[in-house]
Each structure stands twice: as structure tokens, then as C-alpha cells.
Image 1: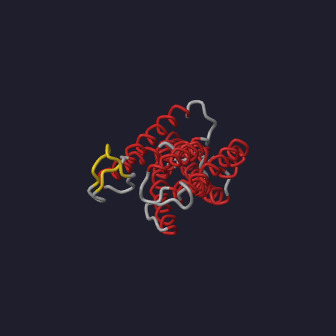
Image 2 (image 1 turned 180 degrees about the vertical axis):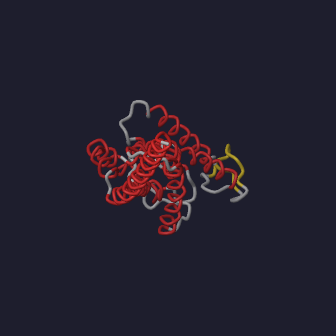
Image 3 (image 1 turned 45 degrees about the vertical axis):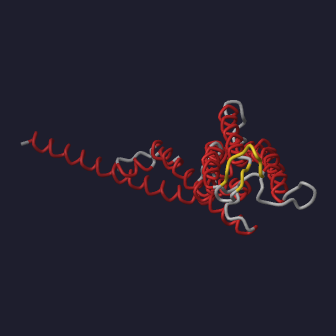
Length: 257
């Protein structure tokens, strides 16, 4: 490990300290989340819906894995740290949708007046915000008993499953056949993806951690940094040794005089 090599350089000490690495991992998690919202836009643009949430559901696992491999982090820990933030952001997003009037429900005489459509509609946005709150609380409780890395697949399964049923109450899209809408297919794909991710992590999770923590890129950077730290430490030892030796010789000369 890099920290195994002694160094008096304060800058180097700071960058290899546990506090800095923990802070850097947190910053990386936030950056990954912000980048994942880009996938929402890309995927949404592909299907004609700019704010499609399934872009994050489908691609966030790959994005987390890539960033974990890039700098040698534990992908399972990253996924568990990241997962609860998705439903929490969804709560805020759906409340925003309610006040904006988008993602609205079907006409319902007991509902609320939507200024955007000019209709009285079922408040499906608040229902989905409640579903997201349930997922958020569930993930926090499930984290204590879950296997490492399984929070993200559980989110994917729960969100896709609950969205499948709430989609029947949404009024933007027309059914393709019978009562099945296009987003129902995304929900089914999401459940299948979540189950596949859960199976893969429980079976090959440890191997995945080993691959990421010993990635070629991470090892390349670590070896170069380690060599520099060791070289710097050896140079410092040489200077200190030379200084002590010089001081010792000076004392001997003074004593002889």
C-alpha cells in the first residue's frame, strides 16, 4: 500500500490520508450521480422523452462500475452508498412534477386542477413520490441486513415494479394494446435487469471487487506514486543521516580542541 512508505512531505501525507480518500470517494459518488442524470437525457432523447428516469435505472450500474475500476474503489460499497440517493431525488422530482403539472394522471373528479392541462386529474405524481419515499426507507432498513452491493439492484426492482402499477394511472401516454403502455415494457425490462444484477453481485461480487481494486489503471498510478514517495523518503533519510553524521564529526572536532 502507498501509506506503507514513510514520508515527511505534508502534501503527500494529505493526499494518501484516510480522511482525504474518504472525502474523495464521497465527491466521486456525487459526481457519478450528476453524470448519471446525463444518461436520463440521452436515453430520453432516444425514445422521445427528455426526462426519462429509466436512463438512470438502466445505466447507473455500468457507470458506477466504470468509475470504481478507474481509480480502484470498491464498486459494491459505491453502489450501496449511491442507491438511497436515487429514490430521495425522485421524491423531490415528483413533488416538482406535481406543481409543474407534468407527468400527470387521468381525469378524476375528486382530483386536483392541473393548470397545465386545464383538467381535474388524479395526483399520480404524489403517489409516485410516496412510492419513492417507501423505497428510500426500505433501502435504509434493508442495508443493515443486505449483502454488499445489493441495494442498487433492489432499487431497480422496486422502482420498476411500483412504476408498472402507477403507470396505469398516468395520462400522458396512450396504451399500445389493451391497457399496456410503452413504459410498461421499460418496467418489465427494469425488473429483469434488477434481478440479473442481484444474481450477478451475490455470485461474483467478491471477484468484481478484486478486479476493480486491482485495476490496471489504478495499479499503474499507484506504482508511479509509490516509487516517487519511496524515492522522496529515501532522499529524506539520506539528508537526515548526513546531517547527523556531520553534527557528530563537529562535536568530535570541538572535543579534541
